[in-house]
Amino acid sequence: MSSQLDTADNPNLGQLPLARGAVDRGSERRGAEDLFERLLELENTRVMYVSRGKALIQEDSLVLRPVGEDGFGPDPVYLGRTLADGQVPAGAEIVMATLPEPDAALEVNGVRWASLREVATVLGSLDAGLFVEACAVANWHATHTHCPRCGAPTVLVQGGWVRRCPEDGSQHFPRTDPAIIVAITDPQDRILLGSAAAWPGSRYSTLAGFVEPGESLEAAVIREVAEESNVVVRNPQYLGSQPWPFPCSLMLGFCAEADGTEPQADGVEMSDVRWFTRKELTEAVASGEITIPSTISIARNLIDRWYGGPVPEPELTGGK
Image (cartoon, rainbow, N blue to C red):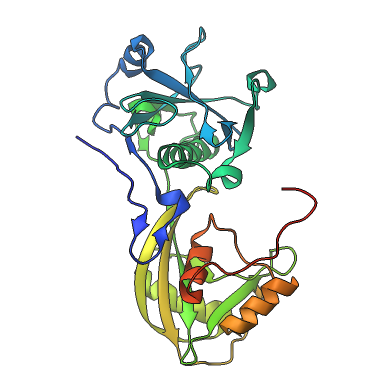
């Protein structure tokens, strides 16, 4: 029997917001041809509506609705069985129903449509895990509607976790792209942060990049850092991971050491790379000279781990 309990309490990085979950995804149940017919008959089945990366939220919880007259709609996806109590009791069966546009008629009694980025840090483990799972698989379905071999439209099977081509019989599975992200320190215990050319404003973060085919994670750390900053690192150490379904990444967090070489941005991916002491980072963030990633990201967890706690940030004014 498959199961997934909350595994976010990582000794190296603590609770990563998007790595939590309390859902038995039920891979052994997906193959039943009458899966959704049986789920329609169960009183504890609930529907999670998703549209354009958003789900229904009420206060700090997902809204999971009983099955309506229209059932699950076209192309439902079985997300699994809850292992912990939340808005619904443990043992509830959850099905994702995708709408082409957010339905304003569902926004009643304080219910609203919200993105994962907006609410991840306030959701409980069960809801966060469901939202990440739903977001990732919905993104895959939205961008992989046709067979990559022959171009024919594919159909959903295996509870929505496989797309099968009716022309050539090939099966296609959800895609996850591994990416490394690394906190680099030098002998003075400074941290190396960079500003990507594509980012607006003056945002700085830890360096990251995708793992290439045939490459180990450690080799990817060394290569990506050298490419983006001209800094040579050694001794990459794995710290933890979390999914990043924007649209389909798995972020693998590392720390690594460097000799204090003066960094040089590549001018393509990175517009600037700099060493920061804790004092320099504190002052730069406090003054608004730079911004750093939000607490939803593994990047921020890597920075806070080096800093020794949450980096102080200016309080927002004029709103929430």
